[in-house]
Length: 551
Ligand SMILES: Cc1cc2nc3c(=O)[nH]c(=O)nc-3n(C[C@H](O)[C@H](O)[C@H](O)COP(=O)(O)OP(=O)(O)OC[C@H]3O[C@@H](n4cnc5c(N)ncnc54)[C@H](O)[C@@H]3O)c2cc1C
Image (cartoon, rainbow, N blue to C red; front, side, top):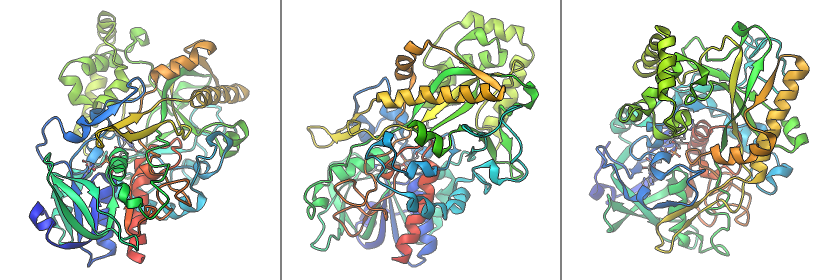
């Protein structure tokens, strides 16, 4: 049910959840299911009909806009959080992400038991994310285990069976609002900002959270027996940084709080030329009987990553760069021109996604128009059919991947980052502004290049294909530094560890120094892996609800 501020501040709740993105909603729904008598307050900063600007995003200062998107491109506010614009790509974390490896130095502060525990909750997370119940590795699917990404490919040093599964994409706000508002247990308070925690008592129990209505500076306390911070990485981190009193029982505020901020290194530096039959290349989506879209990724087994001291990396087949008309595809030129058209472009994709297509360039318009004319009627027919499948259907076509009669595809990489202390979020001198420091390390960049070399060697050994690089070897590091931009996959700043000397929460997601404050955000992930974070986060949110129900 919906509640107003005076009602929310009147009682004592069993659970108070801060933030209603995929993590907060997944947790609240599962907690209500597991604890049918619990009263749950769900506090959301955003509200319906929000103005274009808000006090949270306006008080974020990003130091390196070359590699990090602007605040308004990184998150969304309101019921459902950033699922309002997410792509819906659901990917599982890999066992290697939980192993201590030389390249991540002392950065891997969780272990395989955590993965095993979260895995038990994958079916429920898949149900809520609506990405189907099939496996994340086609090797486990008898119908597809023997099929390959391209003729002549075999899995060894590189594999082709790991898949991403696609959500509708489910926008958690519209999808679950009715259920939340109909629930007698979940009390939804919108338009309120959790601003800081009250101090814990001698036993570490926190009883009060201070909340502001909208943009006002006046605070009032809400009371709860347990708190779950699910405000997304940057706002979860800011709330804990603004609440140093939580750590009064420790030697100090944990050193890891705000540090080890990670995203993913991503971009394109090469194309693959397959040697076999082009019609046997699985360049696009696979579909399950229930309609779920899947897509293959080149993947590197744990033993290869450890032997070569590399970061976990996925590489998938992609279209050539849209902005460069030399691809000669009328359909791609048409879609590029639509994306760079003011107003229309903004309606077709959120800015961070549009940027990955256009690279922010407006170029070669006459040549694009020639491509469209030369390719008629396909130049119009292909985008029209894509438009229908991508924007009209309930389960949306997640992306656009076009067949190459030459059997040649661009390669898109998506790679783990080293957990680096220097990448961090901290409060500015006013005690509220969140200053974000983010850049790539040499290890991040060199690992991407080496992974491409391994893929090239593997394809050549099989005589299945080879890579053609877009840059000289010497120019490649600078090119990767220039092209990679994140801020939409945030993790690392409140990481899980065994003790407050290494992290901020324990493996039950309990904040060190407290007995009843939990963090449910990808900010707890100590390593970023190759996986987009939201699916694993939702499975972790289900796990937390089960843990609290048992406690
Ligand atoms: C353009 C784009 C595309 C993406 N695509 C993918 C994808 O394909 N796959 C994938 O895995 N991930 C993707 N992501 C990332 C994904 O959206 C996030 O991982 C996910 O939304 C995080 O969920 P969350 O609940 O932790 O935080 P959020 O979704 O950010 O929600 C946090 C909520 O908390 C509220 N809040 C914040 N501070 C406070 C406060 N102090 N008090 C009260 N409420 C507060 C916010 O208003 C917000 O509603 C994408 C993100 C973007 C921006």
